Image 1 (cartoon, rainbow, N blue to C red):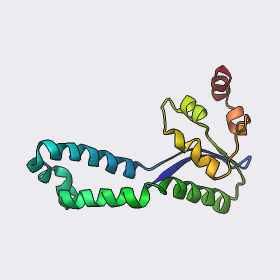
Image 2 (cartoon, helix red, strand yellow):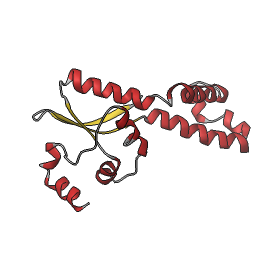
Image 3 (spheres, rainbow, N blue to C red):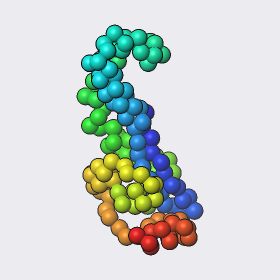
Image 4 (cartoon, rainbow, N blue to C red):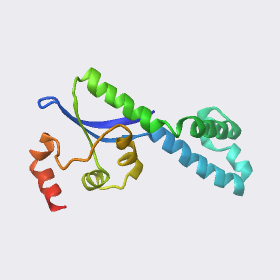
Length: 151
């Protein structure tokens, strides 16, 4: 359900965790909001919505599911995903040098504005420390080096 984007440098034994995301959770919340608004305006239309036909469920079942998802998983998905990611990097890849994008670095290199908590609060919980040192594969890349120097 959730995923992580990793830049892996096997030659130098480093990994940069670019981001973690949970598209499924985000999409369910977005659909929940949209359908909640539609229920208020046109309740009969909601029951005929294509989503429920595709998912083979009723509006009531969907709303129960989305409520349950929020109650049971919203607080833990970030930590669970990063924990699984770190386990994979350390135990499967055998890499110990792990970097995690900062909010500023992630925003600069991705051309988007991600949730701040994923780049500030979450890494702190796992003991990541701020550093001015970028992974070697980023320092060697002319384009990225120039972009980082400009900011």
